[in-house]
Length: 277
Image (tube, rainbow, N blue to C red; front, side, top):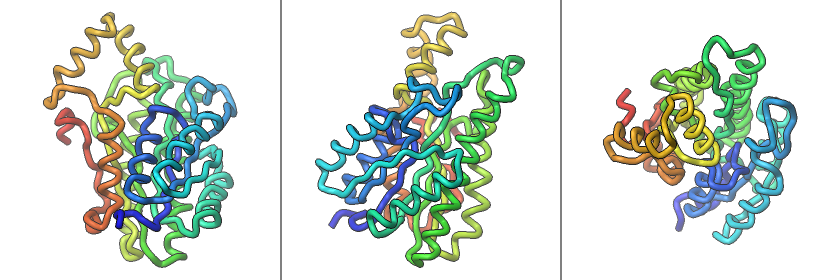
């Protein structure tokens, strides 16, 4: 029996190939979970350009790969900034798959990066709305349905090394990820009596599609070639390499299993030793 057989997992921000959300969905499917993929599906505004989001067509391709693992899978577009859409996503999981047992808040904006004095009100709002408010909406929607079902559950936020340390040109991003630490700590206190754990996973840099954009952006800002920037990154990580999507996915999978039943309110570093806090 696979450890997550019979359970249903919702993963937001899981509509981009080679992204963290895809890796998490595939990993949980390997453990037997039914999967609900979700992403914004199409651009809604200037803060969500097609080049940086998970499109519905790409989400369907990922769904086909997950079906090959022998689990049930569905896909639904959702803008996590909209409470009504997040509620609809949670309802879809229960209606389509019979339960909602795992919710992974993975949707995030990591591509609005500017020096402090260039950050606009719209920049700030866009990042906070997706990364922090969107995670709160997901947490609340999941918790409501898990409490109603009375079987406990797992809520996991994909935070970042930026939840523990500051980075230049990432004020809103760093603030939003630090906010997830407080959100998990507070929610875990209230939800523990219902058998629901709430944790963060905090990866260091991962070269996904978004990560590749970040590499180029910061290499240029530092006046380095991309190769030199990546070599310098690897040199400061005790394990000698940046993260890969499977590192984060494996940590999420562990937190979803019975072996992690007594772990809650934590922010787990997955950083190859780079982040010690």
